[in-house]
Length: 120
Image (tube, one colour):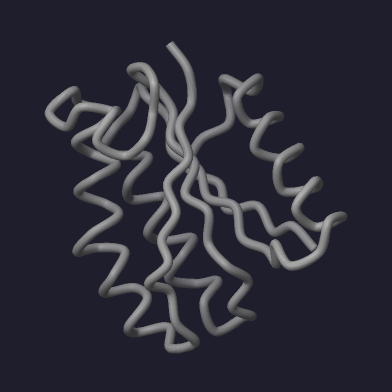
């Protein structure tokens, strides 16, 4: 199969609002895609996937706790399929390339799940 990435334009600077958004929107979407209940094409994926990477913007240490807990919860629920998170600033060309490299690496790392990787 493959790996898909989920992100959102609705992230904010408020950790509570972002956690609410994740659990209300991103988590059900990820569950649905990995279970086959949501067609991957509905979120721009071309094929079925057995791994999801959630891309978070860098929110500082205020966001790290809820993001890690959310990804770990999602990974436990969808096992043996995989879920990971990547957080970072995609602002500059170097950061964007690094984010893409980390996401590509996760696609080739079948033993990695439930992790939140910070990209700077």
